[in-house]
Amino acid sequence: MTDTAVASVDNESDVPTLEFDGSTPYDDYVQASVLTSLQHPLSNDPGEMAFLVTTQVMELWFTLVVHEWDTAREALLKDDFERAMEALRRSLSSHQALNDSWRPIAALTPAQFNGFRSAFGQASGFQSAMYRRIEFLLGDKSRSMIQPHRGHPRVHAELQEALTQPSLYDEVLHYLSRRGLPVPQHVLERDVTVAYEPDAGVEEVWRQIYAGPQSSPLVALGEALTNVGEMVLRWRSDHLLATRRAMGSKVGSGGSPGVAWLEKRAARSVFPEIWTARSYV
Ligand code: HEM
Image: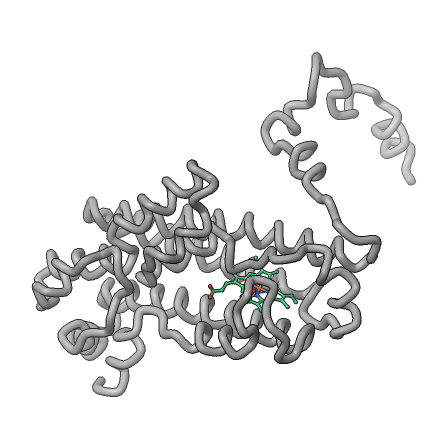
């Protein structure tokens, strides 16, 4: 170490601020002391902490993804295309981080999972309200899916609002219609509280967009949505693989048949016509 470096380490004016009245500004902003006091494993198994923290981290990523897709949805509603695209692009980085979060629990053996499985009883990711909002934004609406949350009025109200609002995909289709594309009227007027069903007219809209100039902003929108869809399918697929490794074909803690049920859920398309239109370009 040079004399100058020693002097600089020893110089107290270079040290970050050490004195605060009350809590640190960092904790006031990040709420780290709250976040890091929310881990309450229910077993003595040392592996449960990785399962609990991974699940909590994923809830935070769900929250960020919902925030970005809500921003994109509202921007499209106001015809603010650039703001919508920025939010969609940011959501891809967040969703990548969400998908990367599987690592600590991606390869649990059945015996390792059994070490804490019974401790959390009927708890299941199926009861995640934030994940439900993700699915609602994609267009996969279901009134019955908000039923488990009746006991939590704030969460239930947020889900109820998300159920009755047009999804991100609904707003995309309204936007395309305002840009002069022939989105069928019955799709624009659909009951947004039920799951979106693929439509031949919408497939034709995406076909026209993709068959046109590749520099079109609407191709960029289609590709951003395709990337979103791919991220979602990859999350579902990694969840399915982690589940198959950890518990084979046992029934789920939430009461479903487990892997067999998740296989069907994972196979659902995201923004279906963006994929099927490709066959005709
Ligand atoms: C190895 C660990 C895991 C296993 C064995 C597992 C197992 C399951 C099973 C069997 C289901 C079906 C519902 C049920 O009967 O419980 C399910 C659903 C679900 N899990 Fe997991 N899970 C794991 C990790 C996670 C993590 C870390 C999350 C993150 C929050 C998560 C989120 C979900 C969600 C959102 C659903 C509902 C999916 C849907 O509605 O389509 N799971 N899980």
